[in-house]
Image 1 (cartoon, helix red, strand yellow):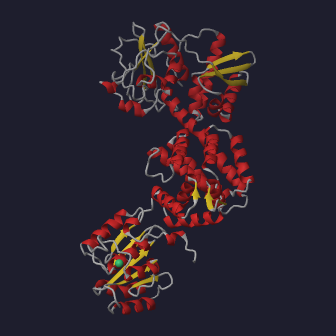
Image 2: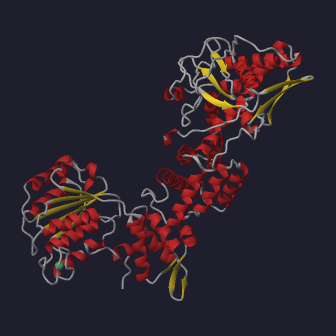
Image 3: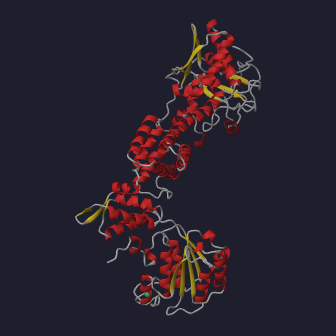
Length: 635
Ligand SMILES: [Zn+2]
């Protein structure tokens, strides 16, 4: 017997057997039951999802010789055994005419069709025309068909299957019932493949079938075509073909997704060498850069969907294992990270198509993933520092100003503190000051000391909005105020008051620090300026040592970059100070006081607030302890 491809052999013969198009089959069955059959149908959707199949089943049902409700045909489904049904099935029914519109698209063919349609069916109830690839029909030909569709003879039914319904003229579309087919779901394809594997006596790993279903990408026919190939190339054991995942990957030239998971782990950890090693192994194994990039795009897309919609999202049409994998990868990155990675790999994939050195391009593309990732902490850092220095218009806007305006007096202005309660722990406790980078803008800083150890530090923005936050210090009240003021003054471009310098060496260092920070701010290096204004500057013989607490070497190098270093060096030259200096990470300087520490249950909102980087930063800047954290939502 002649070999029949799986897609044809297992083509559904009943509406109920069509996978994934319930919305279509239900409507058609109802229409058949109620005898409300239209004279024109458009079935649209992706290739290989059952458009022509459903057209044929509908044709069978319309022309079935057994009446609905008879013992042979209890439902509107075609009986499948009468002459008419079996003729349609074998493709030689006289009254069901299938036309490939891709090749019979001209006006002559359609005129012929139109003229033939006038005559009554040879034997059956309806003359059914199934036009495949209907969008290929020319406009003139469609016009010739229009009249027939406007006033169709009662025995004629047109069914148009198309992947591009938008290319069918509106005049035609408005005279037809339009059914839009869905991509077949992964699970539906998998179920069908399992059934076929059993029927065909194929020994198939579930992972192998899942790969086939995934490769189908919403098209049952595509999945079945690949399955045909896979079975043909499969090794035979005990007379049965054996499908394994590895064999199917080889057939499709794809690599396991575990590889991409590992590549992205290397990206997440910033391990360039590891990333390049793994890529090199893949390329040396003969995988093409373009195919790798394409698969990586798919993998990242799935990771992104997992990030957005969670592991069980409908957006993921993949096996449970792959869902879990995509979710694991999603956990490594933020949504923005994955989006950007996807964008980079997509662009790399595009580029690969017209590049000579594909390998280098792919390598470059993957390295970009790591470098792009390094950019993000810097962004975060910038906003963090900006907020830490008393900025963040958002925070100010959302937090109610407890004190209407800070006294315009110097930094030591002391006033009876109001009942200091945290304004809103959920928002940034820092007030806004976007003028920080602008030395000429007015800027006021005040620290208010309270008789008790609890103090309110206010940093006033040019918008005159103030957000207080309480800080409990382990140091005596005066000591704290001094510390805070000193820090603020060092930062301020034009300080109104200065604290007395403790020693001449410290004064020099302080002066150098102030001048350098101002020069940095003036040159637009706001983050470096703010960072260094809170650093510990120390003249050490012929060199200057700048210790920055709470920041790693890498981040430090990113913030105080070569440009910033150049500006500092120029400033040092101007001041006649030693031009040798180094910026190094220093140890955290805030001494902890066990008695003042808050006891907060682990995993609570308070704990999360305490661990929030901004809060940590604030603690560092003001050398403070957090005494209480209020959750305003619980009120
Ligand atoms: Zn029948």
